Amino acid sequence: MPIHNSDVSEILREVADLLEIEGRNEFRVRAYRNAAQSVENLSKDITELVNEGEDLTEMSDIGESIAEKIEEIVKTGSLEQLQEIRDRTPEDLAELLNIEGLGPEKVSDLHEELGIDSTEDLKEALDNDEVRELEGFGKKTEEKIEKNIEHELNEARTRLDRAEEYAEPLVEYLGELDAIDDITVAGSYRRKKETVGDLDILVTCSDSEAVMDHFTKFEDVADVIAKGDTKSSVRLKNDLQVDLRVLEKESYGSALVYFTGSKSHNIELRERALDYDLKINEYGVFPEGEDESVAGAAEEEVYKAVDLPFIPPEIRENRGEIDAARNDELPNLIEIEDIRGDIHTHTNATDGSNSIEEMARSAVKLGYEYIAITDHSQRVTVANGLNEDELREHMEEIEAVNDKFDNIEILKGIEVDILEDGTLDLSDDVLSELDIVIGSVHYKFDLSRDKQTDRYLKALDNPNIHIVGHPTVREINSRDPMDVDLDAVFSKALENGVHMELNASPRRLDLNDKHCKTAKEMGLKIVINTDAHSTGELHKIKYGIYQARRAWLEKDDVINTRSLDELREILKR
DNA sequence: GCCGTTTTCGGCCCGACTGTTTTCAGTCG
Image (cartoon, rainbow, N blue to C red; front, side, top):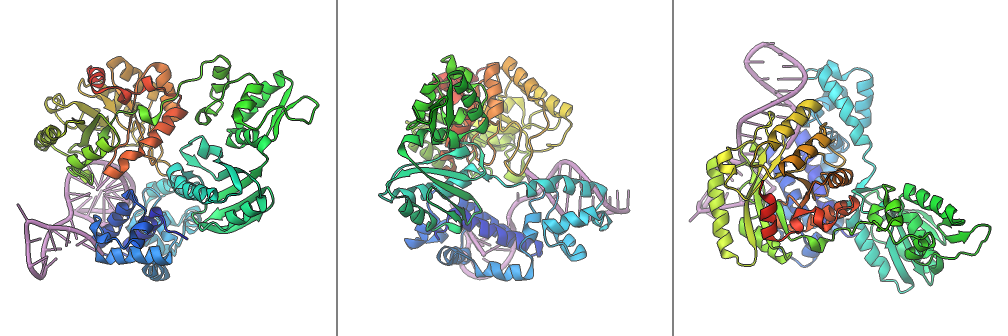
């Protein structure tokens, strides 16, 4: 089986986690984490690099020792060192670190004092009120663990970017087979939902037996769950289940509609079909009482049968798209080519990996007209946030680099921390000298709804703020959104000419699709940014575009589709 | 374990907050 970048980084992270629980040198632990991040950020395939004999120590945070380990992982699929550590320390202990509030020391205590080896053991201990008895633990800690443990158990859905990492090679592999004609990954994957439950692949072909053989022999397959003439199911080694369905050409379109979903979109569509005395199912469109399909080879046909235009998969969520289609009011959804610049990026001045110049060069390659450098402010100490003097120096540097480029404009910005009381982390003086000020929350996520809302409302009254970054601070599968009255925040933003960010990081996607749709309906403008911490992350803008399309956003709803001059005009308050 | 306008070993981000304590360890970002 080929080893993907995420496989390598996962192994390195597990080594780090277990070493940390064992109480090993924290810098050694961090070295493994940094290396994992470095592999994850890589835009190239790690297996390819190893096979081509590239010197991995050229990569940042990878030295001789870890380079050897990565080669071992790529060549053997596993790491002997990890096996040895697992023999000493139960591997399931590492998953406890994902529970917010539990760090290495507490996990170690739970293991040593209560013999807890897994999340299951921890649940049992919680039920028996054993945890609160431990020294260093109390009632509040217990409550916090109890609340956060559920997240870990519910992590069934796979993030879209992770699913893509497996789906794309699989589709390419299937495509190698001459017997296959059409191939589409349907389901929430096709609707570009932020997470997917499993993958549904539909194909048409001339030889289904050959297709099923080929499919079940895919190198990432860990388990063949079922293998038949029209449907086979496998589990990939990352636990993702994949169903492959072989279809007749004449029902490919109706099957696409059926398996792309969403379920409630399909129900709505079928109800509409009843008005036309038609029955829609995955095999076609059938007039009442007949068993001969009148449409179904292509999706367009199916929609046309009920007098509707084609509806883009991203908006098939039964959020009004069928009515809109009926009234010829479907949105003209934004495309990735519409984006003219990324205005939330970080450099090695704070916690990014690349220089201003490197970021700008990569932005040029993407065809951008502008890029804003928006590093962290002083409060975000962990990221080496800039104080006023450092920011002024940084601004001069940005200007100097900008002078070297005549094919892109590098804007001076900051991602300024919104403090607990709603004030900004830098003086109005220095903020007013910047092209772009993004206000973001990085601390105190658990204020009451009223306080959290007031915090934003006050921040938005600062005349220097242009954009609210990752407004809810949620992280998919790991951190809930803050409790905040977004309607009130949106209203204030609209009033004050502030724009809301759709953070395109596939880990965040914040605002989410629903929020963005609400914002649009209120007349608020969105900005889609990657929040890139390295040049390799700039291309993740596509996840923001997916989410924007799911939110019905059109080119005009997004301010970084504008030319530089127009953008500058929009940013004036 | 990585890194180096330091070539060989010392430094590596560190301040705020929480919950537990009663002066501080652990966790977070």
